[in-house]
Length: 436
Image (cartoon, rainbow, N blue to C red; front, side):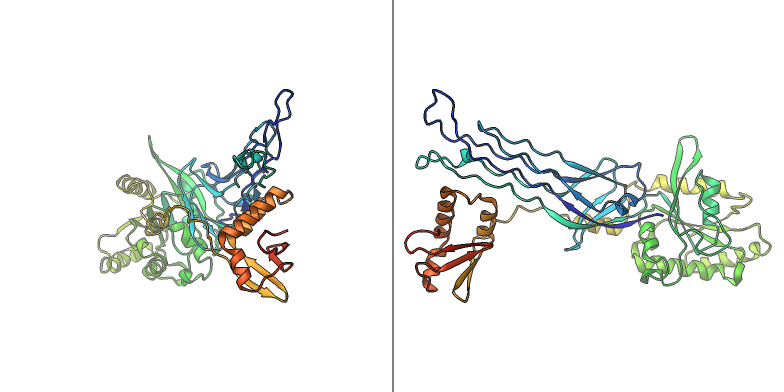
């Protein structure tokens, strides 16, 4: 089964904890703090691998978590950083943040990498907190939590030439004739339900990738039938070969089919209307095909007089080589980068800015006899600080005082013994001192 969309969870590794330690060597009196910092957590990185063609692997593994950084060591030794987690994805994959719907990256080149979940910073050891007033601090930090998010992967087939057309017009047969691909072929609608790729050798030194894309039906741009599952792949192709059943089998009108398919492409993405297109008038070995081709040319000339129409027969291989040469000539005239509006929009949305400064604000509300303080800065600090030592409690108290939390609590009526809650921690307010 071809999988072209997947939703997965990624989380960067947590940073290693900092260490509280002191030098205890002989003949080194009052050696001072010697606790090292923790290592950085591992990043989760997506890397393009041109050997992959589907997102099948993500059906079976949907969670990717980076390793945790190593805890700091004594003698001021830094804990080891965790190894980065490399996740391979096929070329043509678009990575989207599921919560914000922001496009994180459009991955097209082999070896291209993007960090989708950053690992957390390591916690600082007590060596970092030494000051002239406190030469032996017993303070250390927990490692920072790694970034986590749900992301959506969307795969758009990377092919030079895309075969489009109604079901059963002969696209799969044509691909099997011109390449070593072996798509499923049958005399019924929707034989092809997933894209098939094949490498076409035109002549010595000239080749391109052709995709047999699932058949379209009217209303596909609104999701009818295979709908968007098909149309997203057309956007990547540089040249469109529109296969039309010129025999008029099943009572179909070739010109009407051609118009409907183009309308679906146009309504899905207006840029597709201007994509170089060749009409492959297929099944010319059938009795009524020649007459239908004459009529078809007359009708198309009134709408698009410059459109190339090449008669072919996938069964007898009539005109197939001429079609391939013409497609190769068009590809030589077109830049290799996908010239589609959507890619331009994606690139414009990649805006890199400096991280915003930490929010210094706080709010206080009262529930019964308890004051609840809410602050991003304080809660983040408490999560990282190892609040199991007297020095750590004093540092927290100084931070609350400098931010003006003490003063605001007094205005709200806090007195000695009043309970104050911050996140999951509760303290008693002590007038003129700190929290215990």
